[in-house]
Image (cartoon, rainbow, N blue to C red; front, side):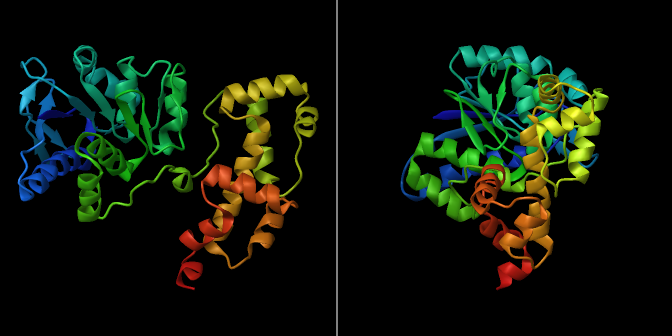
Length: 327
């Protein structure tokens, strides 16, 4: 019997990520009973105390256990809490030493979406890789520079310390864990029952590149703004360095520090984001969009587009353009 412990944090919790694991692991028990097997999971809701938590002023969740209660924990699931990260971390700080203790006793730990901010606060992710919602990637990198954020990933597994990407990606992580604990046959049954697309590896096609301007380096901000308003042109690092009276190495160093992208990566991301919007809304073909965003080499455009978005240009257009999908 595996003891699954779903945390009931304080703050603006995404209730789907509390309810989802609770019902999915219990549904596995139902499936096993249907084929004459014993239940595999015991699912409990665990709070800092047993005090009920009220979310969105409407929904009350009552923990089965407090962290002080004696109980064996085989998997601890950390749901996402939204809001100001410093406040979220502070109000849930009592979980952290408890999670570390349970991990030392053999418990695995999984964070869902931005629950990774709480997981990273325990220190268990230091020197390891994790995923989170693409929208929170910049904040995460600033707060936890010692963690390797792989922002395009749907799932990471660092020897039993798991994380999932944004929003509904948590279903894929739960299926991954169920396959590990209960086997592929049961995992596939769950996927079909809940109609979850399996084997998704990347959340890159969902991400929207908005730049990273919450820094104080004004020349870098001006360089970003110039790139964003002249993405159709052929831009070079030397050109930007001359324009803002900086040496190339100085611009590269400051740009990377401020934005977590090299200058070339930033230019590519701005161009590809513009191409994505064009594919979503226009009837233009691949070559027309390519030229509009300043590419002349078809192979380079297709390679860069897939690297950033996780899809080829035609796959992206067919998925997100209504007329292309209908055709």
